[in-house]
Length: 182
Image (cartoon, rainbow, N blue to C red; front, side, top):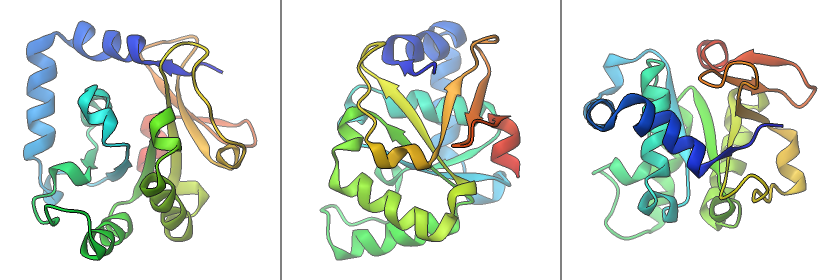
């Protein structure tokens, strides 16, 4: 299993793309509207990971694949403080987006909101349209609870590091680009 680390994620995005291309791809993702992409992903994440820029890097990976990404922190229609209205709008977005991806950092795994979103996504997306994107602090630092093993996971290909694949619980795999469009 090739769990992506924060260091490797930085190499894949900012270092490989260059700071200017990374910024352009991120700005494009932030400006994008629902009408400009046929496939969209609800990206569940811990807000602590926003501070580390991990979420932005994952957005760029999806954006480079032509995928629209919804994250709540960029949604100006959400209330400024978490409330029941926040939960309603998040439920709507999970239903609207074709795929559900949990950026599965240790903080996200321990977040009550991320677990709630995953449970709601499970009920509305079914296993075929849910994947975890495990991200470790170090090569041995990803917790991954037992119940998370029922979900597919997105990992870097061991033979082609610039390519991501989805590994299903039964061990079969698809390229990330294929999974995103089926």
